Amino acid sequence: MFWLFVTPFYWITGVWYRRMRHLTLGDWYVERYESKQLGAAYSIFGVLFFMIYGSMFFTAIATTAEPMIGETVNVMGSQVALKYVLIPTIGVVVLLYGMAGGLAAAYYTDLIQGICIIALSIMLIPIGLNALSSSDELNPAGDMSGTEVMHDQLPESFFEILGSNAAEFSLYYLIAIVFANLAGVVVQPHFIATGGGSAKSEQDARVGLVVGNFLKRFCTLGWVFTALIAAALYADVPELIEHPDRTWGYASMKLLSPGFRGLMLACLLAALMSSVDAQMVVGAGLILRNLYVPFIRPYGSEKEYLWVGRLVGVVVVGGAVI
Image (cartoon, rainbow, N blue to C red; front, side):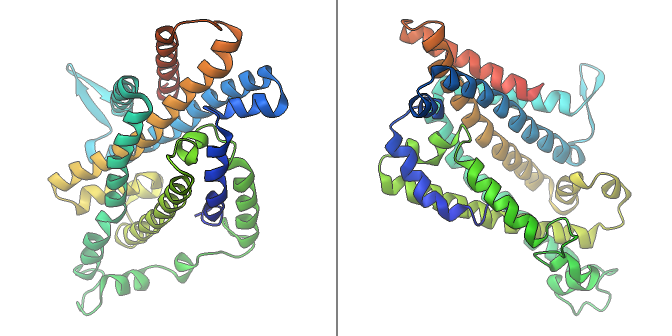
């Protein structure tokens, strides 16, 4: 929820990006500081940023999938850690449709994947609440609803939005991070594409960016609610005490039937791919526009530039996978 108080400012920045009339944020640095070298430096930063950012998503998906699939999978008779199979497979899928369709493919797939993200954000809530209310151990009298059982089982501090000054998320911490995000989000490399720069009109840039991101904030509420349900149901599970990041996958495994487990896993993969594909396309544009063309091949052909962009996409996704 760190982004909640930053989101209204997107009403301004969406139009700002569109009025720049630049293809990449590196172009803006070149114009603003009259320095092609700074644009090249920004493009290198952007690719490294996407690799680290993408690796976070890949790590999260592998950790979440482990309780649902298992820590290892059988590959040609040998047991291999799940992450060494799942992560490269997802990377190849993203590369294929990103290289084939570019920004258009990223937008169309993100539309479908966005719906999947909303679904995964609320899928476990009604089933989890029902599991709480129907538990003989947690609700022996059978007279409490799922939310009442949750409040009965968890300490009051779990329901506080802000903690004390010594808490992990105090008011002062929140204020500091909001200002840091406000200054930092506008120069993230992908924001010129996903943040309104490629919108058909200024109103589309504003509404798309603000409404879309407020939907993400509501999705966050679904994740928090799911975490509270899982905390009430599985507080004494040794695996989750040792590896709390596996909670979502563990809850999915326990609460969902096989078909819905597959749907949950598909939604998780969609959430990852919707971010990585945009990063891949924007990273390719940055290196091509702000490093390759001005410094290496100013008069190359369109076909050559297309293949260089695709190669950079491979580097971005491959770096994140590694």
